[in-house]
Figure 1: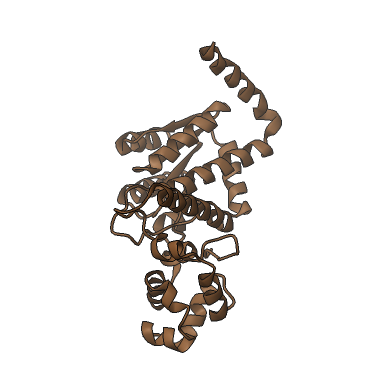
Figure 2: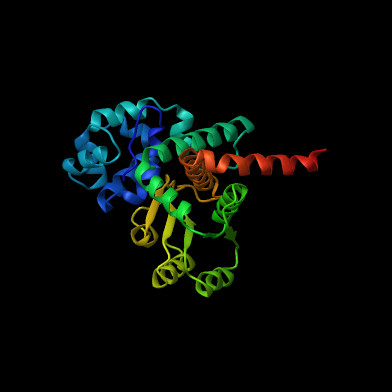
Length: 289
């Protein structure tokens, strides 16, 4: 599913989130707009097509790919951005950023990330993931780098309601856990790109053992998404600046998807799992006395 612009979103961030889903020619247009947003507002559709060495029809297709009716709406959306948005929003940090600028950048980035994740996260795959989790006796969760934080969050939430969940950063241990007794297990793989070698290896192992895979990823065209039993999509933001200091946006998107999966699971099984929540709440409160 493609990321679509709506009035709640920053158009520049919408374009960034869409980069991995665009054709090569549409990508050229997107890159030009990100670099020359203010200039684009003064260009006709023919002039933009000439600048990007594409046809007018390709510009129109690009606009529709990101949820706009056409070029006039693109220019209108760009005009709604502030100068600060146009100059800095697609760079994560800059040496001269003030405290207020850093707050504004982070707020816009995270707000857009959550809004765009809402656009691509659908109910049917969420329901299918809930059914897999409910029917299995063990859930193994794995994520690399910052995605491991989302895996730990999954572990904490579902363990609290009595589900048998295992997570670890050691891929060899995860492989052993999958292979030793593959019966009635589910593997949850969390990866923003969905293209890491280790993630693909684990998915292949699970497939060979007939273990269902729930994928949480920002790349619907990745091998992970295409081969998974169920794919839960989130927004995928590509940072255009030279320095990518942290996977902030993708991590927030992953945590949001884990939260949605957890709360959707609880609403589907509220009576069964409300008691374990109360028990764990009372038990952990003992340490606060």
